[in-house]
Length: 310
View 1 (cartoon, helix red, strand yellow):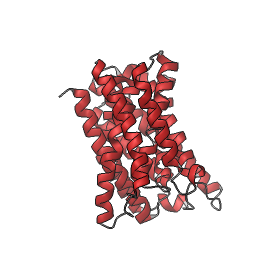
View 2 (cartoon, one colour):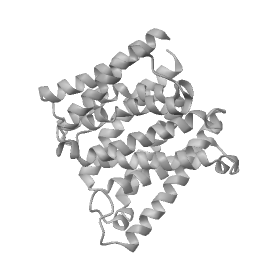
View 3 (cartoon, helix red, strand yellow):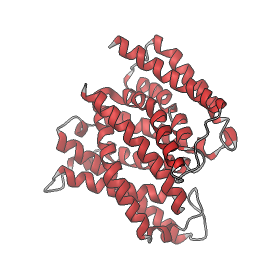
View 4 (tube, one colour):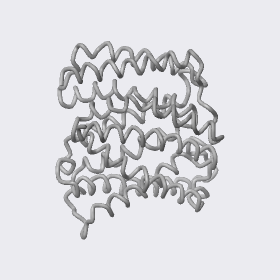
């Protein structure tokens, strides 16, 4: 088994599990999803820097604008994806998030002039059709807040992936890659969390997040930090490192395509969470399943064409 395939399989399973677990935590404890996302990223960044085993703070990554851009974009991605989970099942949200395959194809062409093979185009068309149809099934249809959050989230993750693919520290050894992922996660999450807290302090009467949660009260919750430690240390830190590894091995578009199987594993975990009473069971009506099959067929088409040409 190739290193890229092994990382892709492990990443897909872990992303599915943590997505369902995160949605359950948001519903069970009524955390503001943006506050939860930022504290999780903070814990993940500290974990990655610790794993890098640095004895001193290297300044070279901090001098690169792309380091800060990647970090800020990845935190925004996490915040918006977490917010989208409030408006649809984990399976549906991950299905619609496959729009990043389309955005990645456009992004890598604009950045690197890498064109999709003509034989892949029917797969892209199936993904686009399935997403449009499935989005109409959300509460609020195409006006659902989930779509706005996902559009920002998936566009941001593609931009971050394009920058990460060519970042000098992502092309170095393991310690450099760990340090890069730690830097971009820790410092960006810290800055955004400070700004978020100040905004909550200055305007406590304003619901500034997707939910009406009091930001400062949420940050003062020991339960929030316990959840952030679990999500950040156990899941987000290794997932962030594996994502950077995938971008280095197969490029930004390849990384997005590797996530095409994510809804299948997410559905399995979400059904299990529904059976355990942690979440409402996902919709398995024939219409939703049919639209989902169109999206997955599009992803499978592209994978088969690309694999067949490799």
